Length: 182
Image 1: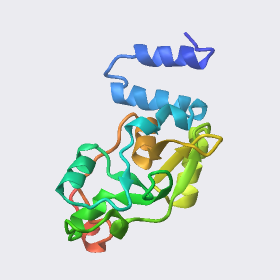
Image 2 (image 1 turned 120 degrees about the vertical axis):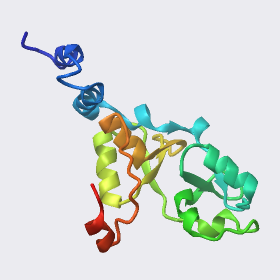
Image 3 (image 1 turned 180 degrees about the horizontal axis):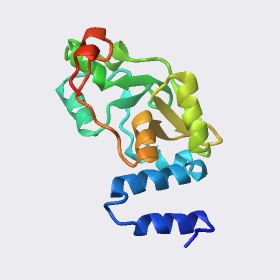
């Protein structure tokens, strides 16, 4: 049977035996095929699920525990009033830093904030990631109200159906890259 629509093609894909295409391969094909029709709002983390950090929050055990338990590593940082995003905090950087309990979020704040609108297509979002070299976006509506966040990992998971994992973390070392066993 020759498919006449994208929907028919996807049905054929789903009916293929596992020894032809694995479940992951099917999912990747389907998500790539549907990519251009999806919006940022379809894949973003909605505001109610976002963990915010106040610029004056101390990075003691309670705050760090809250951040690590959130399951993400990027957080919007808000001003003292809690209304304005003033930067972002990346907990992945904390592993190489000596954080003291009296350090506030402001000390580790990245003041660069990038925005996407929730009605952008995922293609437009991908272009923004590429254009800005930013890996974490604040998502807003047409009125400029924060509606969520989108990070690079979420976008990759949407494209591939999963996020590739790799324990190697010495990409900036030529020697380590050359010696790496594949």
